[in-house]
Length: 200
Image 1: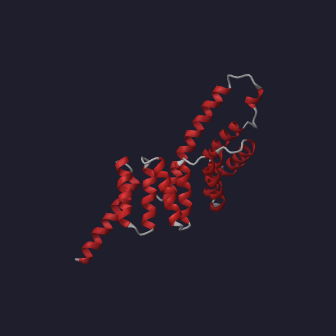
Image 2: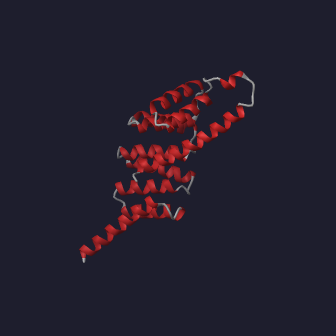
Image 3: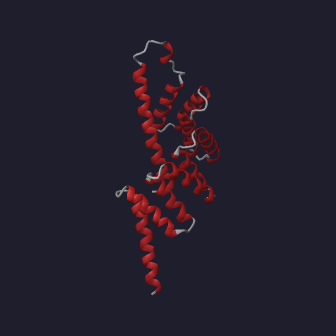
């Protein structure tokens, strides 16, 4: 699994959690008689519908709903992050980076935003910037296996193979069943073994 796939997996889990939160909020609102709670223009309802559209694979509709929610409720880092995520998935990485940076200005301690930004910088081979954001993510949460895995992949691209191995090992210390990290570590160790045999 590539860095981008892992990041998307993490972000999908994040989206799923947000969907759950929105459903719970809507259940609470159903008990209220105030008309505004049933408005289809309520930002919370728009975000919930955007999450549903995303889960159904309709990225265009999801983006439209998120953009409308963002226009009605400014400075919501979750909404801005989601817009950036969908833009990145659509291939608009430059625009996605702008939204990620906006979200980060509001929520500096969000490890997911740092990981997302790092993925774009890695894709653009701006390794120093990617490394900086992964370090920031680890400072926020040093127990995120995905961050260590992403860091390992970045270090492989940078040809810092021994450091990459350490990152994969740290990911596996957190989750012994993290198959992607184990697969990458096994490949690297097998390559090292082969190279040592050739040099004998």
